[in-house]
Image (cartoon, rainbow over all chains, first blue to last red; front, side, top):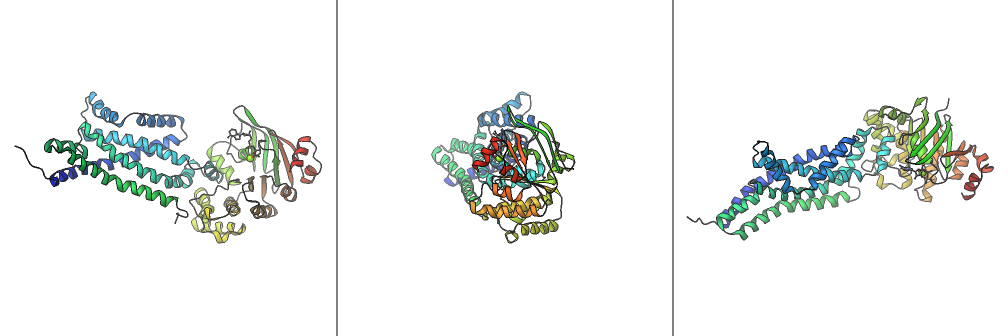
Length: 220
Length: 241
Ligand SMILES: Nc1ncnc2c1ncn2[C@@H]1O[C@H](COP(=O)(O)OP(=O)(O)OP(=O)(O)O)[C@@H](O)[C@H]1O
Ligand SMILES: [Mg+2]
């Protein structure tokens, strides 16, 4: 029996699945930010081992496709007899991937703060952590906001890849609905529009924040 | 007993020996100008005294305490010796008042009200009490440098190190900063300053140290050094300034 789907039916199904895209994006971004912060402090910290490990981590995750990381999380753990549900593999891979990129973005922001700021703080008697906390991070944070918000768009789009390991989010729902409706152009057009609706506000707010933070006397 | 005793200090960057055994004793209240060609090691010497660079050999004593590279003794040292930089290095995200309050509150744990009172006094001392709520970027270079001096003074150091603190200022702004330094000297502050302001060195300093290739080449009262330089290097240097 062949069912008839209205455009509204298609859209409703896609929007329901988009909730998972949003949830996975949020989890990946927040988890990635926390892990990324840890990587950042190892990367710019005083311990040599920490610096090397963090740099290796970043290179590994930036130097391999996200798709391979998803496969490894999904099938790799399976090799050890651990049955990994798709959502767990997807979230794990995306968190680790996001962490690598955010750590690298933030490192650039910390290193953009002139050496004289560290030295002035040091010469006033502040220790490393105090210099970081009161002088460096507040300045780095201001310049980190626009690229961080900008990167969150990459996370949203990155979640699309998790459809390949069977996690049912927006893209996967798109191909399932296509199989049922045989209207690929309509379906994927709508899928693309939903992604755009998610990303566009992020892109706009990134631009806005950038203008705002660059404006003179924006401290108040 | 000297306030700062610098003995046989050596410093290398890789193969480049920048300080080749420096000996200087600074008495309390003394105002010393350090002069010399670019690359002679003047900045490096000041940075070593403040612990921003570690020394390879020799010793630096400040008020009888050894300069050691661990964080606790570095902090103790820096509470005694303040430093003013060529580039001011004010904290751009904080108002002028907060710039002067921050280290008091964070390092000395001074209560906020007390830190603020001290900040207002020190800003007044450099003639900038009315700029308490301004941000560094709203100030001229000369004003920024005066805030940097107030910020260092708020920690109540017993000595101040100044590394070419007027070199990045427009010529018309140099005088206001030097006037502040002159007053500090008159108040008995111990000052160790790298400077290219020869007239200022003549007028204000008790002693001039001429550095050449990582060594103290000549030192003495300004009238002696400028009036009758003994070495050809100093003669040439004085001739060019
Ligand atoms: N962090 C560093 N790493 C390597 N070499 C350095 C470093 N800092 C200074 N040097 C070298 O040490 C030498 C002395 O530098 P220093 O800055 O002390 O000279 P200076 O007398 O202050 O010169 P100027 O009048 O130009 O400020 C120079 O040859 C410089 O290249
Ligand atoms: Mg110098």
